[in-house]
Length: 114
Length: 114
Image (tube, rainbow over all chains, first blue to last red; front, side, top):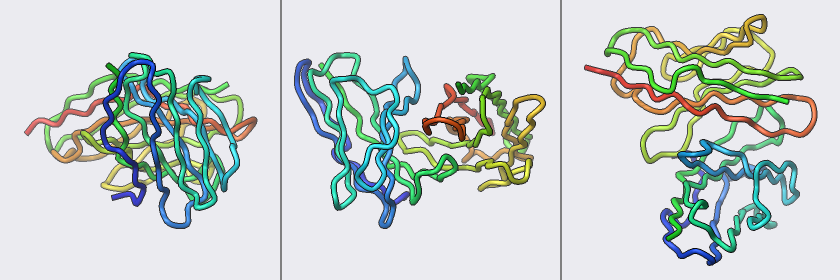
């Protein structure tokens, strides 16, 4: 158990809908990262927050947004969902924001868009 | 720009025999390199990381990797495979210049036969 929690574990929704994925980092970790894992694209970095501020943005679509709250939990919002958004979404946390930071991954949220 | 190539999508070994998972990287700056393992239906777990200190890095569960700058490689090895090593392995590169965005390889599936 990494100490990172993600809810929900599974999510089934329809095209065009909007969903929110939640992540609680390990106690004391200030950094939160979001990733998308799919068969087509592999593991893709989406976005990184450190202590409430956005630090880096990867291959995140305009329809997706994220934020980190004062209590350090983070939410990833996916809107106007398409079939291709079906994937496993991971959150990870680390105590620092540097490139050598060890990231601790949550168990993921499996999203299925029908 | 950075990139990472895992040279084998699948590696099959017998229990008790050595494991070699190959990773080549490309980086314009001094890279940090990581190996993560993902067991079925689980999040990723860090095995080891290289951050410009010793070129031979020892990780958990008997794994180690050697950073070879001249060959731009960071291969993962283990002297003797165990059934519990069967999983997906990801090589990751992150570079110090510019914004921090980790790039993941496509993964290598390690199959261990009894």
